[in-house]
Length: 215
Image (cartoon, rainbow, N blue to C red; front, side, top):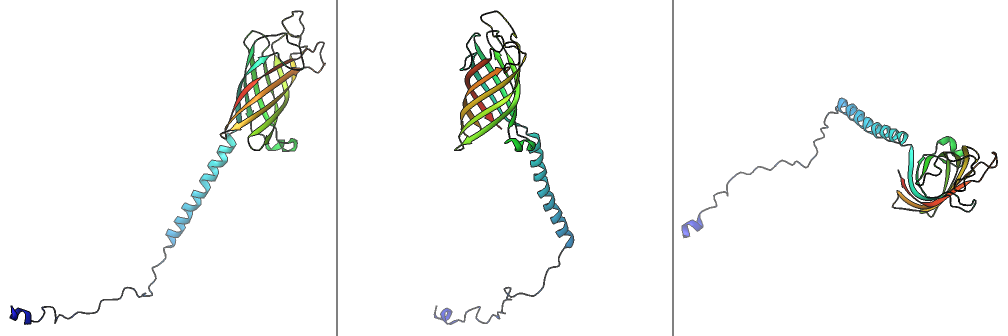
């Protein structure tokens, strides 16, 4: 045991060379690949162009702003007496306002139809809708346009309106509440008449509630 303890360490005389210092900079610069740089710039340029083209195409194709459906109380309103009966199912499509309409406060063109469930007057209509938004959730709409109906121009029947003309002026008013960004609920009133341009002008109104979905 004493002999082993007195023996020299087996690695005592091993010659150790200094390790190379890899932390020092050699001053060698890798050659620049011009083709790779040009190719990368082309790819980046394509990536920038494609989303913009896609966005512009989607914006151009998305012409519908909102769809509204509702249930209306037929021939019921403050400006005419009631003769006809039943309820109306209402469908209306609003389109995005064209840039040319900015001069008249950007109204939205609309198309709509109201169908009566008691075989009384039905109507199809078109016009422009102006909207004012309050506190980002409350709104009011006013629309102005024209309507075509299948009711009577002149009649002696006590349960039908004498509307005078087949083509009438149409106005409507909505007061509503918008929620969850895309949805809205609103009270609705509409009125059709001929502004006394025809022989008779009893007029026809409907009131009710409508739901809107925004695109």
